[in-house]
Amino acid sequence: MDTAVSPETTAAGRLADLRRAMDEAGVDAYLVPHGDEHHGEFIAPYAERLKWLTGFSGSAGFAIVLADRAAIFVDGRYTLQVRTQVDGALYEYAHLVDEPPHKWLKENLPQKAVVGFDPHLHTPGALMRLEAAASKAGGELKPVAKNLIDAVWIDQPARPAENVIVYSDKFAGRSSADKRALLAKVIAADGLDAFLVSALDSIAWLFNIRGGDVAYSPLVYAYALVLKDGKAVLFIDEAKVTAEVRAHLGADVRLAPYDGLEEGFVDLDAKVAQIGIDQATASRWVFGVIETAGHTAKPSADPVTALKAPKHPAELDCVREAHVRDGAALTRFLAWLDEEGPKGTLDEVSASEKLDAFRAESNLYLGPSFPTIAGAGANGAVVHYRAEAKTAAKIKPDMLFLIDSGGQYLDGTTDVTRTVAIGTPTAEQKRRFTLVLKGHIALARARFVKGTTGSQLDALARAPLWVDGVDFDHGTGHGVGTYLGVHEGPQRISKVGNTVALEPGMVISNEPGYYKTGEYGIRIENLVAVVEAKAPTGAEKPLLEFETITFAPLDLKLVDEALLDAGEKAWLNEYHATVREKLSPLVDEKTRVWLERVAGSVH
Image (cartoon, rainbow, N blue to C red; front, side):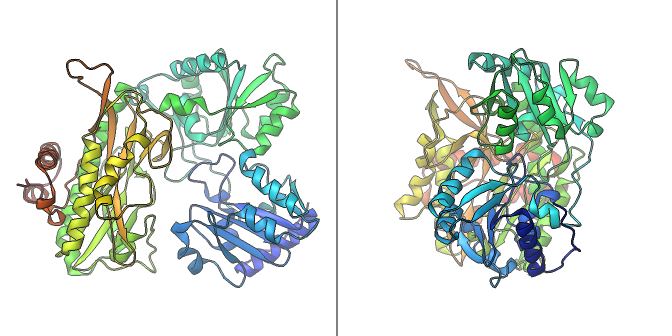
């Protein structure tokens, strides 16, 4: 297809350009997901096709474009945002969960319509429902080789070109060769000849490399074919690979072009017959490449996910150090906020920028681990709220301010939430905060037998809120990587059933909350590491517990001491004593005095 148009500055013009491209490609509808070829949480600017087309900048969305109508789908986090960013005269608004794309397609697709899609941007599992819906409507799905957005997006950013860096073994704890040997054992045990790794965080962990291709996570675009003997082919833009990285990878890792996957599988030894591939992170196109080359693509969970979840002891030591430095930066910010917040001159964006500036003073700091969530007053009740410069709310007296943020450090990834009272909190706010705190403490103090899953512990964090007839609608905890993704699996703490047992070395968040729509939000988040616990005499199974590794004061102005029992008070006092001990040497004198005052004891 040779579509060439001038760049359009309006959403209506971009939509018209796409429809012309659809007509040339012979399709009556086109699917536009928010995502790239590797289906991770964050994507590079070139892959922001949904944003370019519609104006929607959220992290979860989907659009369907027909010849005479279009719809955009977002989840509950973005129902307000989508209406401010996307023209309702051009797109119908739909809920990604309540009215998902496959349902809309079934109800609105014309008979005999052909639905085009880019096979690089959809996993087989995601396409199944869409294919079934199109069939029920009397239409069909058709892969289109060249992305139709790319065909009309004249000023589309280039693919990232930053160099790959070596991630030192002193931070990683194990060499890449050792990790590949572990993976090789899993591959062989599963009866496979090889595994194609497509998740970018898995590749970064496996080869002890990091990159700058994706915002908020230090990843590099690549595919990796790992054989059952531990040797590997890394499909990557070789211009990014320095001599140092080549030497680091060694003779057992052969480099191939990132866009050479098809040729790579055609040239692959026929004895490499059974190739495992993860349906959650590999696209329909990758499955087709393997099958077309005469090999068998066997759907299988990415084994690297389970291997990297428990941190190596050396890795965990580095993570602990990163959290202490991060805690010092956050504490300096909280002291500054305590002084400046009541003046009414700050807004959500300026506060976020100040916190990032404190973090940036560390020479190991590489940037935020996700877009900071800074919610003043009612905005704090929007769980995944993101302040924009034009609409940022002012931070004023007699409101709650919630800030959820994190940093990427060379030796660790952080994620922490604090809720503070600007001025005097209400009795209701204090009660709700204290109930959230009770749930947080209950989870932090939990001791559990080996084999326990996060879902079995989830109720501990919710029980105090349930007594008041309230709850929170998000998960209680998610896994966190080491200078990798701030959200990683397979472990999590949530109501939804999770069959993955918690293991020593796993890092996970502890973040219960409460949100009163239109008024305020509360969340208390620390990261914890799963560690072995000393078992009492007579114990029949190994015991595990959580070690809290995040250090920053909690706002005692929001604590109703009468609601805490003796054990909860002891935990809070011990936590604040540890915060003072670890952070006082790292902060300035003014902050140290403030910390001694606010991180005191409850009685």
